[in-house]
Amino acid sequence: MEEDLYYTLIYRQLEGEITASEEAQLGEWIDSSPANRQTYNDVTEAWTLSQGLSAQIGMDLDEEYSLLEKRIKSARSPTRIRLYWAAAAGFVLLVVAGMVATRIFGGEREQNWVELTSEQGNRELVLEDQTTVVLAEGSTLRYPEKFRGKDRPVEMEGVAYFKVAQKAGQPFRITTPVAEITVLGTEFNVSAPKGGKLARVAVTSGKVQLRPLVARGDQVLTNGTGLTLEKGEMGTYDRETGILKKGIRFPVNETAWMTGKLTFEETPLAQVIEEVGQYFQTEISLEDSLLNRCSFTAKFENPKLEAVLETIAAVFGGTVEIINGKYQLKGGGC
Amino acid sequence: MNRRDTNLDQELVERIREGDKAAFRVLFDQHYKTLVGTAVNILKDEARGKDAVQEVFLQVWKSRKKLEIRTSLGAYLKRGVINRSLNQVNYAKNFVAEGQLREHTMLTHSALDELALQDLESALRASLDLLPERCRLIFVMKRLEGMSHKEISEALGISPKTIENQITKAMKVLKEALQAFRKKE
Image (cartoon, rainbow over all chains, first blue to last red; front, side):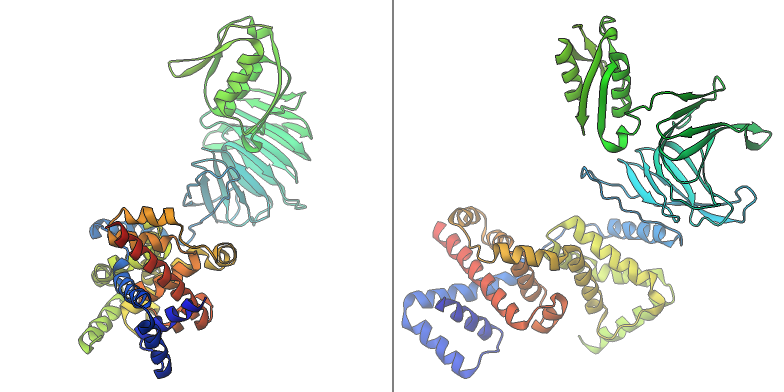
């Protein structure tokens, strides 16, 4: 557009970078019509006003400075880690600065250990040996920065999915509060609830060894050879009863917390309710014992609790109620 | 900047280099608010703006032993904040996508009507937000941050000719916002 040229000339004039011939050209254009003169005046006025458009942010400098001091303090630790996890579902991630503990593990020389807790949502991380760990919300993993010894030790509480990198002659060892799991290169899910008495391992591929831990004086030792689990198998150790057992059927929803997929195939409703409750970390009860005998088949992806419960209720002609903050399935039958 | 300021800056730099927290606080008090303004001008977001400025101060403190100022402390910090903010904007990516997509967007009448409901200053500020991101950034750097064409072209990796074109475009939009505001009055 021809007019654009004059905007450029006005800008050059305002910047004091206009040539004599350009200045003459601009003057001619301004004089040629009142509309042009108006445009010229408005452009220069808008330009003058625009300088004052800078953002004005009110703030308390003392408060801002104390934030900076906190930042400086947390940056001081030499082994501070910052891990970012791209959440597939797009929820907000809280970055947890690693707490560093130096300790001697199994007679190996001192190493820097890092402790990580997934405060919000699942958290995926890759260890030094390229082992991938997906840590469920609220779970904690402690691991050395480098695996230097005869094996690769980590400690965990909560729920995590491990995809262990193959490394001949350096087995991967996971210590939970009640049991120890040794692997050579495989994928599996570990569930060892915080403060709980249970350790559960479900193996997706490869071979895993699950061994109970016992306390001897102030030492913690593994007890016996434990259980060898292969693909599709699940092992459970219950410290309360001392029972170490192998499950026959692979629990299809064991990794639901990570995949976001809940699958039920002719599953007894009581089990459905338990697994749904586990997935959403909430308590659900079945009011009618008749419903107990029903079985349920459905697949959910990234489901919402209400949607799942309403689906179940719809299938069996029941209703969903919230009593004292707890969900209850009522009525209906099959 | 006069000689007295230069000397003060030099003294501050020396004290900060030696790890003097009080001197660091003086630096903070002198520049923080202005720098947050700069970061917010670029990022259009107060929280992210503050974060960028805090990170710059953190870097200054962390590498204080190597701190060396050739211009002034204010200019040094401002450059840090602008670079950091631009990194956050990830302008290169925005530029390609938005530049192609919104290059020819002009103010619509309804947008102008909306602007006219506010006071003149807010109306002009809001009109800036209607600009394509690249155009807005260039204008902000030039007019609000007083950067030269050379500085802008180095920071954004674009030609001086592009800068002139983009500023001209922004001026046109600002003028339209001003006229729309007048019409309502």
